Image (cartoon, rainbow, N blue to C red; front, side, top):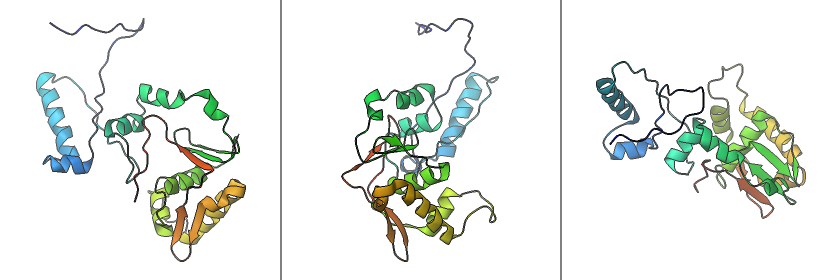
Length: 210
């Protein structure tokens, strides 16, 4: 028997569907395929079943080494409504943070002693990049290549300009500035202290240890 159709909001009608597939390149390779091969196979199947259907495929990207269930990462990266909603439905008491630093990855904000810090987008990206690679020293060149990917040579900063961004970041961290450590001659590293906590949210990538 055909599956029962779920109740639809008044004034709406189905126009298609999204299938979220959670699999990384390594798992696909282990199965003897690639992500592109899987996409094309699904398109061929759909073309056979419904030739009039239009398709659009996109790849969900997450930071290299990020953990979490693949399908959850995909849903959040592609802004699937229920996945995004869960990141916004965290308990209200979390906003009343005690003293210390809270790096809230899901909401892209930093709380310092319970107050929201005025980080710029790029400053938060820089801190998040280090946080997701906790304990690993990141070279300046990697920060430039990753955080300014796609920028022209004129737009991307030099490696020494990263030092300026880090100084501004530390200034806003105030008494907790030493969570971002300088590794002389190499780059920077995030060191978590007892008074630092990280919130990843539901379905948000969490870091693997390096």
